[in-house]
Length: 162
Ligand code: RP5
Image (cartoon, rainbow, N blue to C red; front, top):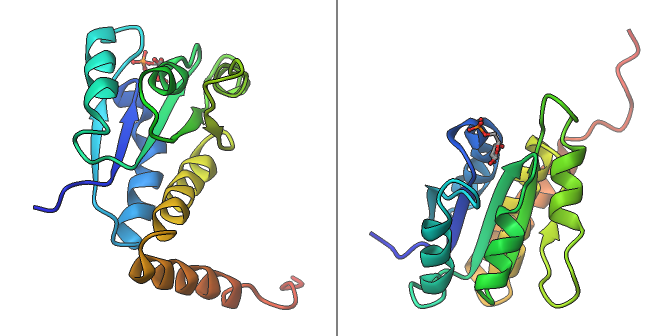
């Protein structure tokens, strides 16, 4: 099996329906990835180990999704130099604005590239990871260019007026 270049991590099983959109995007672009549950609060030792070993294991990008007090992406960014893309998972109580602010408002020195709330953000995290990897991977760059061109081509010039 090929060494995964992207790690998708999430705080809970309940984040999977959102984070699946990132995994699906990576699959569509042929990017090897792994998927793990790593919680900043419930499994802090697992978070520490993951961050400590990520670079040596060959990961290039980490996509981290969490909801509510969403500390996972930021804590992961504090533990590894690998770029961390954060996905705010939509919550029932505050619609994901809590997740968004928790992930976005990082202190100077430890950035997290924060996506939109929910599925669109997770899909875009996959595309962002692809764009980062494509800098040094011409085959992937070609696949990403085609994906973008196909999306553009699928947009009708005029709306259906019903
Ligand atoms: C966070 O708490 C997770 O990322 C999840 O979005 C949220 C709720 O988790 P569960 O109570 O559904 O396991 O840590």
